[in-house]
Image (cartoon, rainbow, N blue to C red):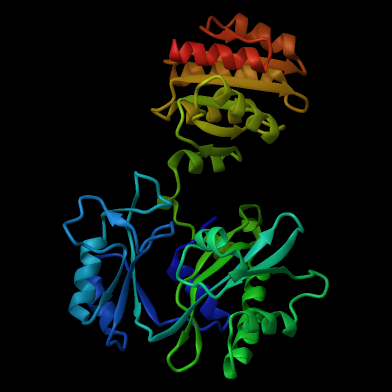
Length: 397
């Protein structure tokens, strides 16, 4: 689960991490009073969406010379004007895709005098199963670009979960970033606090880009991006309360309410599969035969008829779907349950596109019998290869 920058900064502030003073604005008429509550003389006006690259992004139907989603204002009035021009508009960045995201909230914060820009991130290293720090002197840039062009400027190291965070970790970061004097002590303190919030709040990623050194020689987090382990939210009610459902794909949101693993994609063939590995293989073989999957959908091993019905509804709600491939290998999941769910879903939402069903495993003959006697116009497949060939042929003719 992702949260907005202003929410991440409020969380960091509660742990004593230095961030700028700021106010969130939901309506244009709130912007002037929000900016006036801060000192100035510079204000930074930031569009709040769950995507990076806001500063380089462009608004749909932007006027010539109009700036992106992060703007500098030299007066309260100018800050309010920037906010009014961004709210309710669609911002397109390299992470949103061409559809962009609608800006529903603005963050106005005090400007900072910057001496240096640095990069700092914490994430879960899936190779070592440990929390990893990634630091670089090249702050303010896309870290992917730095990794591709100047990988020697990036330091990455893991923290032993038994020993936990230690002073030498902070000093290692400080020396890598070329910090001096009081900045080293500040860095050690900041690293300790960032690690603490990461562990206590079940974070998956915390990126500060840039981490700045001010002209007064102090460290400050100028930006903050955080995401959390969705499987831990049951024990993080304060984090769950920060969820902005308007930033999520409506189909993915509906799937999460039925404990379905669903990710929307850009293709034309909807997939309903049980098991993540089989789902990936199904997507791959669809591409092999010349089409594109419209989604990743794992109904899981313990799916009920109700869950399968909802999964089918979610797939058919995507207007890009031109055909559906159901590929079930019944181990824990029974093929007759899948068959009953598919039939129930078709009766509720109708079937306007070709449907190929491949069943194998537990109660497979019963499942095939249920579908055969349903009166549905279903194309049966013998195996995964056969199913992929038939659905691609049905869609592409």
